Image (cartoon, rainbow, N blue to C red):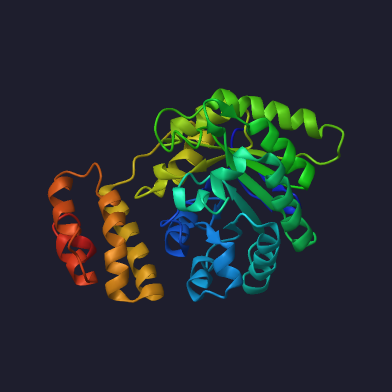
Length: 338
């Protein structure tokens, strides 16, 4: 089989296996739209609080909004209470057209862990089982339910095997693992050897069941070459890009080219900045100009990485408050665009 290939998640069929991860504060519909345009086969919303959803928090609706060019997408929810998570899943299906619901078992942020959610679930696979089971029952086969978790809590508590077994037993249709522990955060290296072990473990657990449960890999996929190595070395069914795609949605374009043609074509500076402005325009539609332009500061800082004079550009970007400000900042770089 080619390294770039279709993927099935339960009843959901996807054309390819290059995914955008659920990145907190980043993978809103504006960014997901640009990634879809650049070749992402599937994307996840940033994590949505089950508590906020069940309290009818207005902000959650925008977090879950579908990008108009997304063929398929998943809404990721987090929480520590099985009943609340089940109710949240029902609300997701009522308020969106998402093709999948993902459960966050990986976020290492303290305020998430305090609510017995995110990486806290790696400490208690039995509780993870209860949450996944509750969500699977709540959606009642309407969409597949998937789970994303980490290696474990820390180096002394590696629990990915128990978490995978709990997720499979509870009815998860796919598993994603980030190859770091909660204690590592985003430091150190992602353990791809453990990813390979997970692929083998899930294959053995589900052999003879009639349905293959795919495994997706996350962690340290920053370049097309990284993605190719992950697929080759671990056997995962799909690669999930996170930080590597920030300011670089063409990572999907280049990875697909590498996997299918064996070549990588560099993207001109102008195209990168143009993508940034398309993202900015989408942000303006959702948030209004001032809020969008403030949010876009970190995004244009990412888009400007590697550009000649990028450091000087970033000094100006961090105070931009209007679309006009951004046009002025970048006018010398891509004057023909304006």
